[in-house]
Image (cartoon, rainbow, N blue to C red; front, side, top):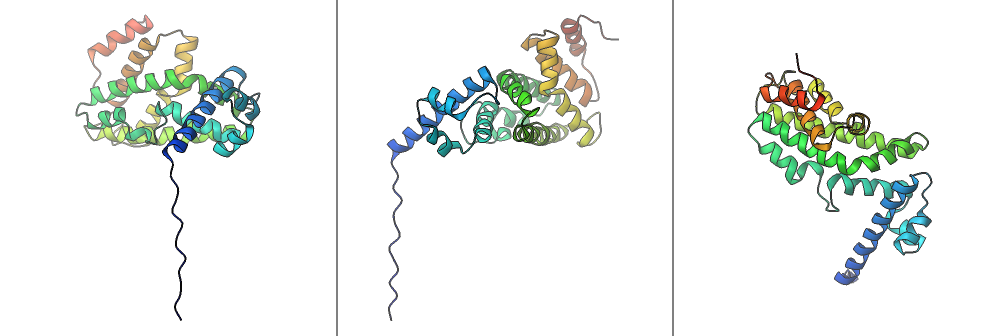
Length: 236
């Protein structure tokens, strides 16, 4: 007896349909960011986002599934700087840091990259921080982003720096990575930029000096000069 196998269906791919879907997703992302920044996470509804994006509420649910998933995907885009599916450490900036042979230059690149990223994501991280105090899903998301993902990324970066020479803390490990994780946190950025009133450029100089001082065996003269310029305090 001959077995007849059904002919598999060919998947239909329409570039115009894919383009429209991408445009719809972009409108929802933009509307969500505006709503979260204006109203906060808790007070924002997917219905409000849908109206602002010019789509039906069901469309928002179909594309993102839930409000917390919408916030997560928005954060992913803001952290990366675009909507390309490329991991943060695989992007051009971190990879340039990885290839850089000089440790001081590596940390200068890290300080510049962190400053640029925090200036971009801090407003949304503040929204997430506020939501985390009252919403369990938001608290879990912030813990995942800040406590696990970012900590893991800083551990990897410290390893790249250690590949170029010795560190003050010894072999790349917990102490050095935790130091970088704390120094590059949104909380420290918030204190220096919002409370102490440092400019973004002064914050970058401060962070670069702190990273070099904390990680590398020798401090540089220019670091002392930068510390005095930023803080107004002459280093001991």
